[in-house]
Image (cartoon, rainbow over all chains, first blue to last red; front, side, top):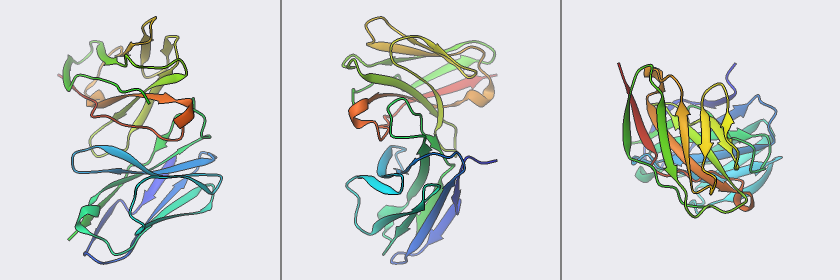
Length: 114
Length: 111
């Protein structure tokens, strides 16, 4: 049983298109996150939801819109894709926002923009 | 969150203990030390975390110095599957909602 699962695993698309990445966790956690890992391998937080409420929204272009239909799902929609959006996007979840609560990550969605 | 300093890379012989150091000299009293690793093409994997006491779980041990300015992650019997980038992260309760990753240590376990 995969704890945090993302779909698709690979996404290749053209500049200007709109695409979505889905994330689901079966851990019963309240908090979910989206991170971006660029070509230099640095991981940076993008968004976080706690109980379906947005609690972190880092400096991310508004072409990126997260949506949390319920506590187990956090999807990421990207409009008008640009070359610089090519990266690996990781979803994560934690029991709560508490500092002693570790985050558990999915295996990532590799987005390539042509 | 306090900044951390880790060596860029380390090697370890298979079957031996891997000791990965981390400096966090500006750590505050309410900040936890977390360790994650990322095996190639996979998502970051939680290993262990601690506040001031040493911690051990099925994966590793975490040794935090008494002044809390540094810590060591110990993999007691490294295997080839432990080859990964290991991240030491210091996390404060005030900014508890996210992890701030640095560049980590590339650990290579050699046969």
